[in-house]
Image (tube, rainbow, N blue to C red; front, side, top):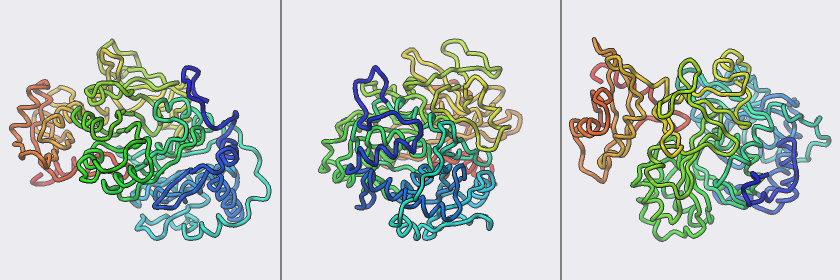
Length: 510
């Protein structure tokens, strides 16, 4: 299963046309190997797929048929993994609804996906479902998973059948559902690269409704990865405890989470001898943070860049200098093509910024029941147009300069906030920053920087940060205003909520 150039072999033997077939093989070949750990609860690959097959019988009794959509409104947990596998094993389409979404987003997802069943944790304060949505309570799963298995397997799934729908963050509108068939999920096995090695123990701290889980289950099977689920909400205490007790080999977190873990007083005493790799995403880690991670954790860090529609795009490699991890998102992963184009779809000259386009076997096949938006971003030649703008550096690394939707025009000049944010967080007194454009008389738009001061440094002044930006950026990119905040608001997908920041900036007295 790994690329021919990679000498590491997958522990899962065989060639499989569908994810369901790979699950069946894993249940036998990896029967006694741990698949998931959650708050002391453990389940092997054999028991995971066995419980899923029993649950599939209950889903069939409730009217779920091959091709139907089953939605999971659950936190990251073993139950989520069992429900996911049950839907796949019976040929249904599985989708996750992030438990942090509000009623408007949830209603939009249900209306678009039309699930025949929503498996929901009724003990959590979740957004209300539309009245017509059929529900199965999480409390009923234990009995269903202990019952008899489906007496007869449904008709074999075809490789090009839809198997997973993953919803976008909806930061520029209502969520859209990127759907994937079986070969798209299998592509994650080859594109994993250094992130996966046989029998890894991976610490996961992101919602399972994200592409980082939904699109990577085949990768987990192929490499016999044990996923250790971090409790929700995330805490540095739990991260350090799990690194110590669960022999973690690969751990992923956002830079702010890593910074808190590195400051934890018990980290030095924790057993980190098995840790081989740390992964960071969603925001660039400063060179200082990368160096601290290497020293305090005893392993290299890598950066990964992906999106819902293309869960594998680029990444850095162990041994890349810390500055590369901060200023770039690395090089294309195995099997992935990346191109930069202008507004007319033409390749941009070397060194210039352009819209990021991606083509790979692992990209989405389209937006679920949304041909109009699919046609806007996915060409007949397989090239997927993203919302990101980037350029290539001299070493062949992709440098993201911003989101096309976040760009603002100040006095006729285009400003991409990400470029300004990266400069701000390099200041030793800044822990986090986000920049938005707001309307202003005459000049059109101005930049407003929301800054989280570093608790370990003296409070900076706004003029100091503006002068810092002026030394590193063209003058029109310097924020016109600086607002200090205790924390940046986050969306349900754990990204900075730019809409909330714009509302703060536009509010009277903002």
